Length: 378
Image 1: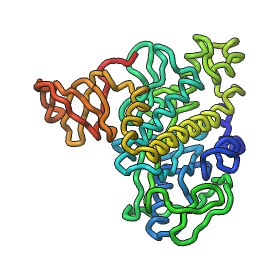
Image 2: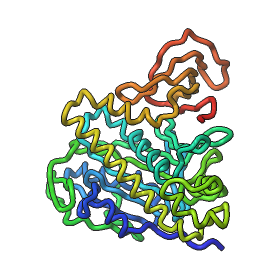
Image 3: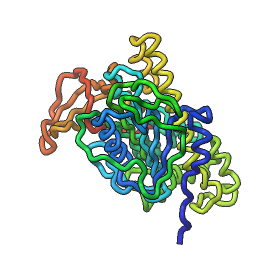
């Protein structure tokens, strides 16, 4: 019988991330189990915004769960996680950005996660490189065949008009890492531990959910074409360790080409990954907010540059399936200032059962749709 996987190290999360310890985050709360971290936070924030009270969830607050039982990704796809095997987290954001740029937040998080997987786990080699697929999937390329999904990211806007039932402030089996007193006075909002100030984006907020497959075995993967950090580190161990996490696993891989769930080196892996990802994301967001304060007109190009560095969709032959059932094919050539994908379209199909029709090549921008890379990413 497989031993229970260790929970997240709350002490390390506090020391690395909270403002009281010099980090960027206002609050971190861990739960044993939750249906969906995004849904739970959306309900809590909706109640606060509707009642026009202060918030217990200021900018850069995090809810993370050991187990998520009914999470949802894009297009309503199920995304559950076995207890202790994944990272299921949601971040409350009230950024100092033009509302038109909030759609970039999920891609900015994708950039932060790609950097974490490449630099900390060594997933930055041909045939095994972490990449971002537009708009919000993080994948790992394979030596043969298409890249496999390792993470999904989903952002949801919350406003007083949202219809949701309030969630409890602290759920059974959860623990909150303290950050200091929280004001609940009318129209006040906590912006850092123990301090109050105006809301950063009015009465609403953005909840950014991130699910990462960390210690899942092949049998536990949520979808067929997916992978996990454990599976990729096992592959990496066969080729020699790379990156800080790879170096930490050198002793284990010297005796065996596989990394077992009971290995002591894997105990802190989820906590370290969560800390590294959240630190990188906060730094990227701060960079964009600083640019917005200095010269708002520079923000779109900064966002395009940050995301394009890891966006493997660019230059790819893609198929874009739209909500109305139609689809278009062509080459992805760029991003618009609002984060839409620009495609030079060469074929169209009005419905799944109909044939593709060639068209005169023309540039089109897609802000929504399911994108498929039509050839493997190297």
